[in-house]
Image 1 (cartoon, one colour):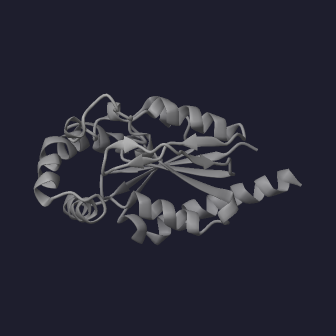
Image 2 (cartoon, one colour):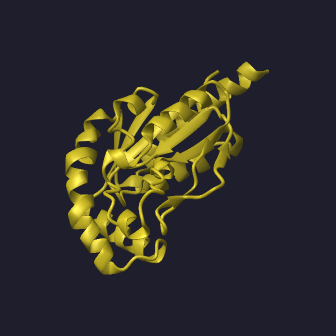
Image 3 (cartoon, rainbow, N blue to C red):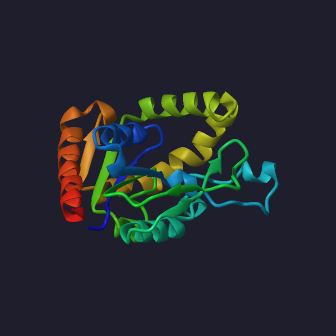
Length: 211
């Protein structure tokens, strides 16, 4: 049985990662894998650090989505893949990738997961985490300062220059492509239970097929 691919999209700071982890934590660990679309940012080794800092990372072209699609096709076929490892402080890929095995359920999460038609066509279930803008921006500020070593001024400039306009142009419209919109993110137990129930049945069927 090929893997079931779950796409989880939503604005930056919406709680996509929390939703993905809560779903994964509710399933047998050997039955589920999470892949972050963020890991597929293009490695612009041709640019200086200062030039890379000015890349519009919130535009779909900043991501090597075609490689992610190749990896999903491979996982569905039962093959393992080398997922890139990305350093957000240097804006470069690390030398060693993360090897990911094929599992019955594969969760792909990222702000642009529902934007690209090629990627959408590989998704069996499409989720969109819908969170108020003020909550999203405060979460992003905290993450970028605490985890990615950026200043408040840099975060503010990036938000107004890239994050907000790209969200309005690409991310928000992709919501209509979702099979299920999840308000309140990881706090929406009803929506999460519905998804988990479906995925547990997939894993159980995979175990029966393997016997």
